[in-house]
Image 1: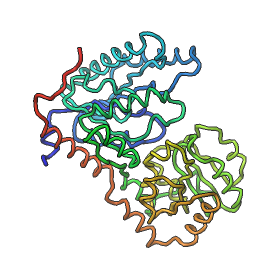
Image 2: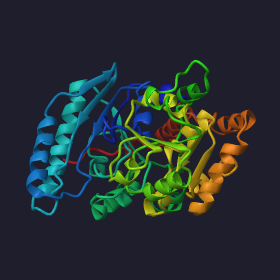
Image 3: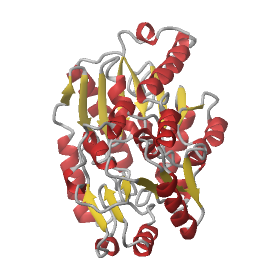
Image 4: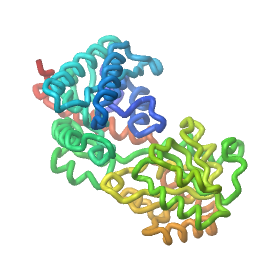
Length: 401
């Protein structure tokens, strides 16, 4: 297999990802950041996946974002830029779909010219801008499917499902993070390759270091401390967390992340602390306060097809982990306690707190030590390079007129 550095020389990437400025650092951010260590990257976030609600308010918001798309790309660091190219969400209005296609193509190619990227791959980790695949003059198209986006609450599920399927078929190389989606994707595209999430190992290992301070907002908590890091959305079982806190009032429950749903039932409990979103580099300081970490998912289609990033991050801190079931989490059953119901979750937490040891923590870290984001991106680029090297010159797609 060719050296990716040689095969990709002279090429950049136009990368369609999640909101660059979101509170959470997702796999979209981690992969793009490491690609930018190897080649120029234009990161494009593309609002417009959500189905519109109040038309007047949403229309004003959409036009503001369209105006923002006319601004030059913003440098993140040398060779790495960010821009926003939104889509109007009112797709049932005649002409909106055509406008989105024409405007998006024009705006992205304009941004590429402005940053000086002339030869490039297109790289999608979200499906709704997928109509641009093979329409930008790219040499090669990658779809790194990291989630079942059509199952997300509030999105235009029908549209996202159709865009996801079309992009899965069209991509020159398809990567799939959720293991449960792999058979479906392989039926759509023979290049489909399992590519699970990685972990920022060096960062989260600092939670084990004596000189890493506990985050100021967690220093006064009475132990044991049960912790959660991540956004609090519809797929998080708030009732389970509240029940656990009520059953063990002598424990502290520390939740670090943006609450996107009503959490008043948690705020009312004296042993629950909602720390809100925190800067990504500080997360190990919060994790250091944990005696155990939890993944309290509700089982739905989105969770069934998820590859939770926090799983590997928790394990990299060495903390014991208790979780509800999910196919990817089940692969780590040797190091994670998986509970089937409320009583089982509480019993697993008690066992985790009682039986933890330095040796068990070392084993948890070892379970993810070889799964760094650097390693993941190296593997992905090796696959892309191999595909590029073995692709007939005549099959290169050309942009649509």
